[in-house]
Length: 131
Length: 396
Image 1: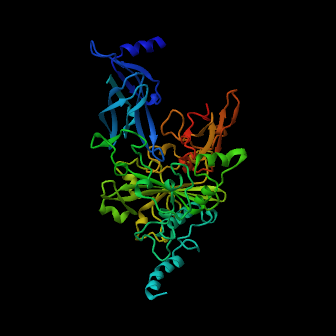
Image 2: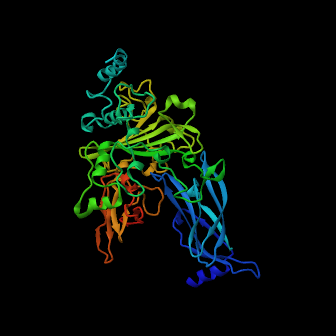
Image 3: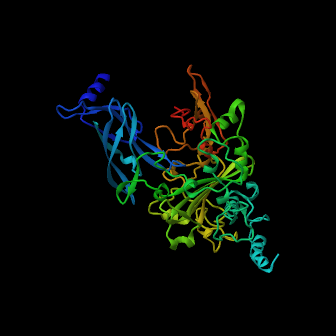
């Protein structure tokens, strides 16, 4: 299994995950974004995402995506999010993109999104490149 | 007394003499639930706490009628942000300066959630002004008795709480302590005649009108806590609300009718005021009913998204603190693996136990007398705020 994770860190083009009810806490997944031919080595990073409650009475739900740099360089990441929210009882699709800069070996928050419907799940894709 | 002030007192004194359900003044919180019955007691509390206040004395102003356009008694009490300071410091005496609007409410802020976005007109946009962008504003306040107890026992920070429960110590608020939790929503000016209102200055300098949509009251009463949950009548049909998943239970307002009549009680002074539009959703003093079934009580605003498993008393029974691996830790509000699935029924003693390195079970968490707001306490030594245990104490 470990070897498989290692392989994925080399060949995985980008991370694309679906987070459902059963995946409130996800295991981190190694990932790397390939570089252009002749370019610098691909960025090394892992991501994780989770739903959490916030506010005094935990009445709001926040979807958080974290990026853990495993790279010795500053990396720039682009996160694409797709999810749903409820409007007058109807499920409505929503998407967003967030750019972030992660310093070497550090963890950064790709973003925090408020108001999505957890039961409908969310998917995201993170692409990172070295500076 | 001048003639004008005497005239001003006449209706109040007439109300006190004729219309109060009890011999006490209606602006004085009642002392004992047992003499009134739960629902009558809840409404007596509601009237007393919503009485217009004298802001200088931070107490009811008996010279003013119920429903006067002024802050209420509970709005002059100490806000949780007044008490639980970021550095865990002593909050100072009761008569300190009032909070500004941007600190008064529990809002989700980009300070806590970097790059925070929310949905506006079908798009994710950054949260620029947490107050303006919040769907509803929630605040917690405590009366002087509750505040003085917190201060005297240093419960305003994590270290004080741990010390209070060390070596068999026990947190026990005095009878008469009252905590309230309130929710406000933006309303239109045309709705102001139906709501207790508040105008808030936003970050851009503009002012916005808010209406009180919900008020939960917890009162310590010989020797247990009593919970009463009130909502604005409009909440049940609110398009962007949860609706009322449970019928109301109010034997006082519904005298002679089914207890879910959703009515406003008469002859306690609510007629002709905004308070006639508020409903008692229920009261709670026990974990289970006579058939041992869990008793539920959920407020569509204050327990939004969790009404189905909302039990004030069971949830608050989990207010606690302990040290796990040297880290201040609390029992989580919700069940492990769920976001908003709460605990109901009788508390399980196993909730409060942890397992040490040898597999031995030990009392890891000490109860904090049902007061959840204590979880907002910070460390005076700069330690992280006490975290919630992941699954500690959950039954298998």
